[in-house]
Amino acid sequence: MRQLMSIFSMLCALVGCTAQSNNFQNVAVDEFTTDNGTPIKMYCIKHGSVRMQIGEKWVYIDPVTKAVQPVTDYTTMPKADIILITHEHGDHLDAEAINQLANDDTKIIVNPHSKEMLGGKGTAIKNGDVINEQQITIEAVPAYNTSADKQNFHPKGRDNGYILTIDGFRIYIAGDTEDIPEMKQIKDIDVAFLPCNLPYTMSPEQLAKAATMVKPKVLFPYHYGNTDIDKAVKLLEGTNIDVRIRQYQ
Image 1 (spheres, one colour):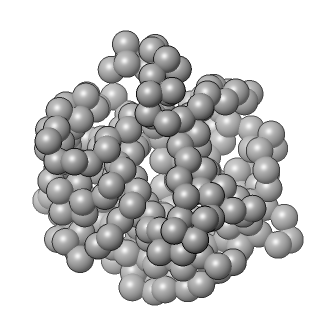
Image 2 (cartoon, one colour; image 1 turned 30 degrees about the horizontal axis):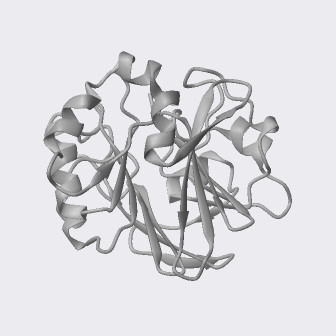
């Protein structure tokens, strides 16, 4: 995998992305367009942290400064229109990152326990809730562990995954989860972010199973730590899922 990352910039042109520099790493930009012509750009930050430009709006998912290396300075990035927090673990919820990104107009959307940990800041939504924010439909979906030895990490009903819908274009951000049965109900996904790191979320085999349930057109394995992510890629060969590896370590 390390060799794959070292030649990453050379592969960008082949997978439809461009290299871009900031103060902590080179990132790829993956570009999409909705049926109505809204441009969507997706930028890898690290681990479970993603940023997206949707039209003129900036959306950040689980931004983190110091808890995951390299340290990220969000003051170098555009202010957030929307910040989504999946759950309250320190590698997903970081008040410092939120403060660096937010202004008076930023909408902060969190799971209920994260709102408590932020001292009441943000709009809490739970599994099954759907809200509309700045022409983006945001649905909170389940994210939890099913394995007996993992349920203390992410208990059922506490954390959120999110589905964003823009002009019919659907993005699934799974959060920290295993290959839960509710994924069978998630349909028509254009882009999915699925985690793959033991012991907290999924093995490569579980990620492959989850991907075949969701059937996204494009899959970004993320939050994969030291996982042999190439194994997941091989397991998904022949599925017609476009698996793209970015630096989500």
